[in-house]
Image 1 (cartoon, rainbow, N blue to C red):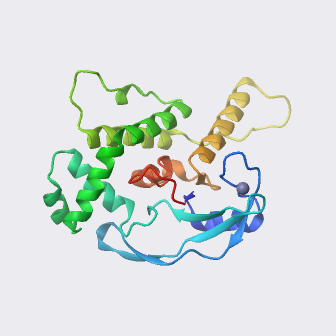
Image 2 (image 1 turned 120 degrees about the horizontal axis):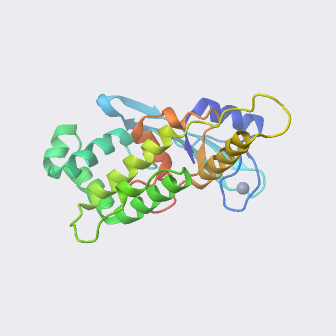
Length: 235
Ligand SMILES: [Zn+2]
């Protein structure tokens, strides 16, 4: 699972209010032993030790790694470092130059770029699903048939537009007074319900509703469910 705020998610697990993300399961998660600690290189050259929490469903017994949105599963680089490399590649910079500019081995950068080029259509489709659920305009991401498309650029454009839609999706305001629902209240409740479904589809834990104000590349981790560099479910 992707986690926006690890401390808030830990509190939700302790309180028994975090739902299991497995399809069709109505269970809640309980605290479990921590996942393996590892070093991750973040943007600006910061090395941090990430020691993710784990939780286990009381009902289906599946264990979840609660990975912060700044990281991708099994990657030694933060998503902002990987994102900087992909952005440079999308603007036409060769992978060797990209690797030198961000201080990452050439073979690693080449693997990232090839992965997104290979899975670009899937990433674009995921971004479009998120945009539609948020009620955002998907027109900027529709590709016209005759124009040759740079696969990394197309995927990044779609993911960037979906991240903007997430930023604009402010939480539905609470009802101001008890009593009968007005039309606006009803729309707010619908928006809240859609958003909860979307969080579940993205396998996202966001009890403090902080996704809208998270950094864009963290939002890309949320939108792709941590699968920016793979289509395989890995949590
Ligand atoms: Zn479950």
